Image 1 (cartoon, helix red, strand yellow):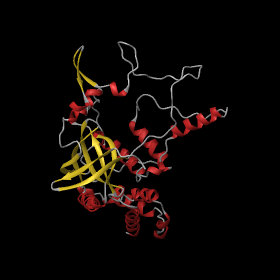
Image 2 (cartoon, one colour; image 1 turned 135 degrees about the vertical axis):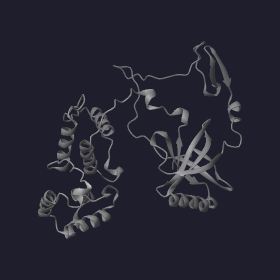
Image 3 (cartoon, one colour; image 1 turned 60 degrees about the horizontal axis):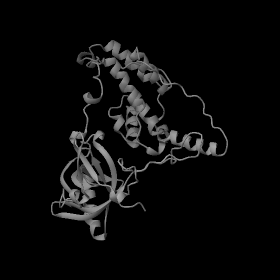
Image 4 (cartoon, helix red, strand yellow; image 1 turned 90 degrees about the vertical axis):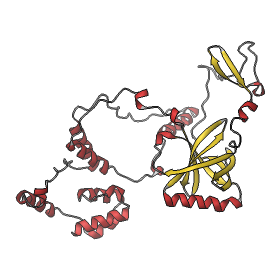
Length: 339
């Protein structure tokens, strides 16, 4: 069992329950240390008094804040403990915000939130169900590890999670860290091709389909060197450098590779007149060509994967296809084929 990170009370109005925090994430991979090249001598770091050069024990170390170029204020643990009376063991909910209203850049660390005892189970389940039904998350504050944190509490994987957030003055603006992005005109033609590319690569989030290849290879390298063997991997295609000169050609080529066939530009938007039959000759010809296209029997749709159904829905121009489940996609495609 993972050790508890924090224990306290989750409070909202007159409702309160004892909760515990557990870290929801951990990094995996081999433990790496530093050595002096050509030897087996470990490189270690020591805490020493810079004036005397003597080692300093943890009990003799206190914190200090710089207030001038060469002046510090020493802060004892008792000084810090009195900064937030009443809040050091309380996660106080101050409001509820839409679950998708906080952008990823604000998120810091993730924790699982657990009720401390049986008596807290019912209010815990009640809050979890209410947040799921309303599509909102709780905004709260708490003190942990000598700092006050802004926290989002919400349902995930059947339990409550708590995500600590950065404070507004800790979030950088793009202009603070990167040069301005040059203005560029985006044509409807290029935008249509880009939309086709997005739709062609649309898929559901499945974390099990992703793997940390670098860590896997690092572990293989360590095991191979330990056994006196060498590991070689096929050379990978170098990353492209510079900018794409002709955006349209690049999008067409990418679409062709993704679809395994001919990439076509999006059809021009029809005017109201042509939609009503004002240009019936051209429209009829195009429509007749489409009808001649051989569609798979409706019964064959049952054996298709969601990605195959999504590709078919794209060819049939089914609206809202990227947000449909597999069952909805099958029904929509079946309806279009039968029309």
